[in-house]
Length: 411
Image 1 (spheres, one colour):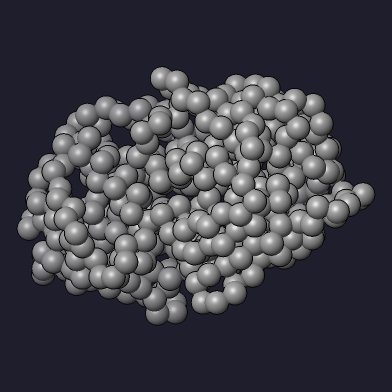
Image 2 (cartoon, one colour):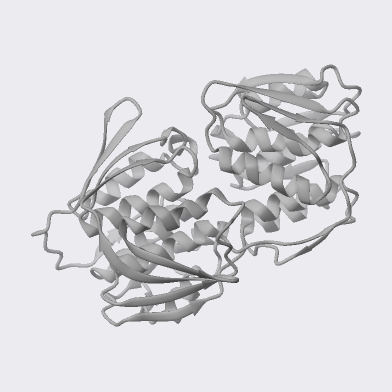
């Protein structure tokens, strides 16, 4: 793929059925559970995302040194898996991945009895693992506002520990739906757990060899909600989605009711059509931070002002997503700013703002930047730099936009 794609302004009706990619969040959890259960479980509809391909490759590798590339979920899940191993291993990633913190997870695993050390800066990958000897404790206390992937990683290895594990979460619990997704998937594969108030308990037990079909990706669905909202006319059906979903990002259906999209669910799909939108919304993203960029862009174009909280984790993703979005939205005349610690305000594009030339957006080596900004092509001509970044979670994205009739050419 070229270094940039040109998306021509799309004025025709959006009318199609989209065969969405499947959830990498579910896929990566299911793959680790499958491995921990002795590779007996049967998994269908695994994601084609590079993160999932990487997860599958590393779980089947006997190499001493493993490279997760830029996959944060894979780094966290593989760290927990390797910590319980019987051989000496190492794990690393891209330069950006080696700047993303992992100390809380590594230290929690060491408290359990692992022997993890840092090969570079303390608290960050790359990591060195020595063979696991014996369990030192069956109880951990960690902050509830950390990445849910740390908590999910610990939960998935918990049944394999001789004494099981109880995790006490201190303070407010962020990204709770992702923790519940993990527990629900574990339950599907035979694992009982108790999540009461601030504590989660998982006894020592065996994963069962059940089968599971991965749901389509609600994060990927969010970009179609944005496209429908910005389009002049639209009726788009997204397949493989469940109204009662394990995925926290299914919250996009409710959020987008306020930004101009109605959802109608059938047995295995949701159909999106346009509806009226609000002038102002207050949104807490702590349970669904991956939706934030999509909502920023859509609200900016639709004239919806936002007051938002729960965006803290965006600073340590593939890029500093709040800073990157503030820069890119300014190209549309919109403003994203932190008005006080933890509270962000989006001021949308002025109604009289006229765009005559193509708007060029940078991707910051972040798949969600590229996919969130592409729907602006419903408003004007757009250039997306580094378009290949979408392979991380939604490799078919540009092909699916072409299916929708959007004219895309390489620059």
